[in-house]
Image (cartoon, rainbow, N blue to C red; front, side, top):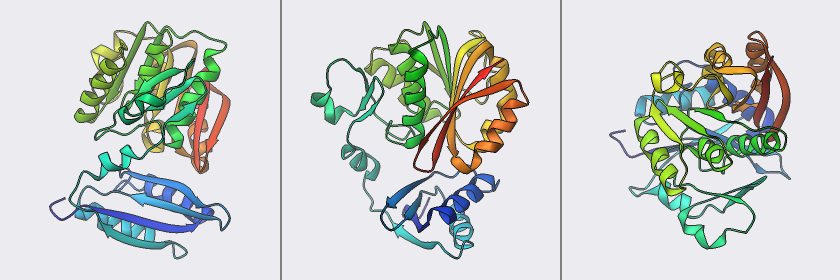
Length: 288
């Protein structure tokens, strides 16, 4: 944005906040917008949406879409000209998800014993491990690892690379990831080196890149993205899996589960588990 960066904040009851978030996801003009939704005040039942537009036009559209829900209180705040992302990350505590312990470099001295420790620097990429979607994916993976071994793993929309790195650190011989955002690919490869993991990440849209097709079929596919691309990629993700292989899907709200499950059921996938964190959902599906 040529203007000062802004943050759009909306407060309301859970139902209206989830409805507004679903509307953002389903609106082609803003479906790629960066936002989060979480419970801010459990006692009062107040939920909060935070959106970070990348242009003034996107900011205007998000405000318009959120303001259409009259029960939401919407405001816009200017962000100071500082590395607010780095500052916010420095205050994030480590996260435990099953056997996985995700932390930033500022918490290197707080790693407990007997965990799979994942040091993740986000930079400009999504996926520090603190978001409910990432936690859900790691918890789902932890449960699957108790019964299965995953030799080949693909992470679609890898962000910081935390999921593919977790696979590489737990025995996967091949762990590769893709992202449509070039800085995220750079960051994820840096995180792989930081964690001494053999995961590799590629700048690619979809699953047609030769580096991705070369290792198919996969035993496990992660896709922690958004509901619309999850639906659009349902056939490609299913085809990338071996028979009996698993997909862990997230980046979706609980209210979007039925849409995702229906899209994958039509392609021959069976729902095995749901994991919920706040309004977010992670789905575990198996290919027949």
